[in-house]
Image (cartoon, rainbow, N blue to C red; front, side):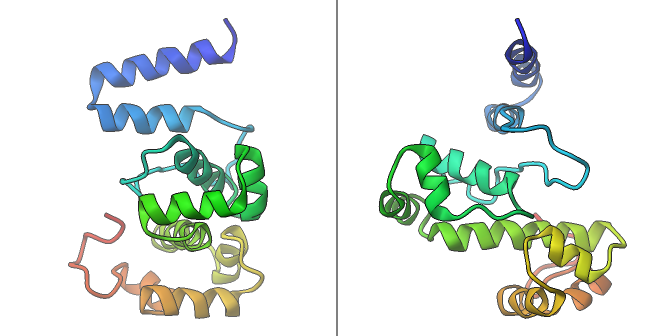
Length: 168
């Protein structure tokens, strides 16, 4: 028996109660590489819905599981048993982005979640999302999202989205 049995049972129930996509997402979440704390991000798995290969899905899960303490792309490739270049090629072919850009997108999405749903200071959010300081985080967030984190926190809506659809 053990822990895998509980994960299999949970996966079975989700597959009976939800569609295949939700069951697959739950299965990815249930495959934990370590015990998470309340400070860890829960893997979501839906930012790159075109990811189908095992290597890409596992790489994204490793990235989501290591938002605060970033893992290098080389280390991720090594854990997958492939070269860094092969991982970069897979990302480019399958989800049309680099592993570094995908990692940043995951970190920024988590930052948006924290901005919208917590009262944490910007510096704490920066730290939890793997940035060295609040200034660097704010610059990167503004460059990629289009508004500063403080503005996003006030409005809850990134540019170009209808009110209430942020994070969808």
